[in-house]
Length: 427
Ligand code: IMP
Image 1 (cartoon, helix red, strand yellow):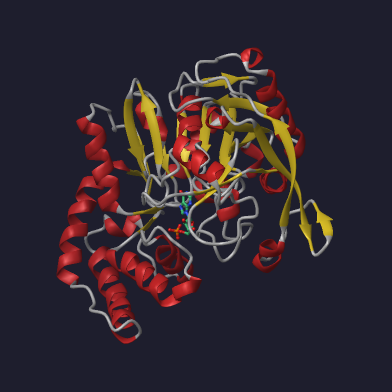
Image 2 (cartoon, rainbow, N blue to C red):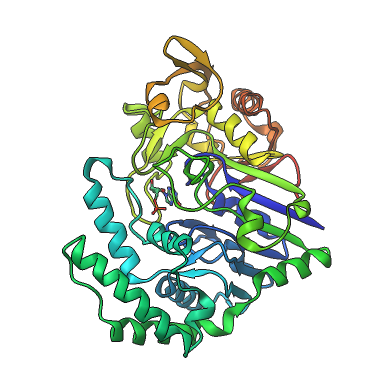
């Protein structure tokens, strides 16, 4: 039996989808525990590209149980579109289960997300405008509507009416915008409820029973450590907890059950949205990495900001998540560079610091301290064994592991399942 939690060790988009898909082969159950359709995974199987936002990547294997935990916020229209898309590609989705405790995203959440961003102007977060923050706000304010309410034909109209009264007032009086028509949302969401009802279950119970039976369970974090509401670069963060500890909360099981935590990190680093980014490359190399790495958002299509691997971030992620292993993705993207740099520390007001600062103000003042390593020119995308990697690529990986103080278990050298080098099995 193994319970493995896989998280993003940077600012999201680390390639978790690919690693989850790879590990899902050995897992019996794959679980999402936070975030919503702000996440986006692109997985390539036999040359066919799948874009998933809410459904765990394990769905691409016919026999895996795929769960959406209570910690996720669900946009039912997006979930249904995803189910339909998978059906079109002959992927069976019968093994999906959705927690009845998960909260629902409504059109007013998306609208409020957008207006709030506009209102903030230069201080905007750069959200995905999918209504994620406002949905979590309602959850914390105890006014949210959950899956269990949505599928209850008596409860749902009452809750929706109450929520809309409040939201329409907010839209009218604060943002000077039109509100939403109750009947329209009621009709659309009642339809969604009928479609989703067969998938609704007590996900926590399923997980705990699976653990008791000795199943292999993979928890798939969305976003990344630096986007965590508590531990990330606040306020430029998401409104949920992408860190490993949140798996327990967002799926309903105890921390004593976790066996291993894997942090996924790119061989470089990227960020979408606003906020300070010490190793950001605003030059040709940054552009080269963006182009070669296809660094454009799966969810929004926005170009991602690119930079050198940040050892301070890696060490921080190791600490916050209790990482056992790293999975390094997109190593192939760095091929062809004569030299590669890694950030080993920051210089802050003349002092060398090796721990990630708590405030944006301090982070904005941090200058990266780089170490330059020789690059490798070879195409490594067909390499399948660690020993066969160019010596400089191996040195580079060793250095990343040293900086993070965590060994590298897996290396991804391309988007396909096969383009993966395994040094240590995690299941
Ligand atoms: P939100 O999650 O849409 O509220 O956006 C908050 C911040 O998290 C913004 O900077 C987004 O760009 C970022 N973000 C949200 N989801 C992802 C993701 O899956 N990958 C990378 N960044 C993300």
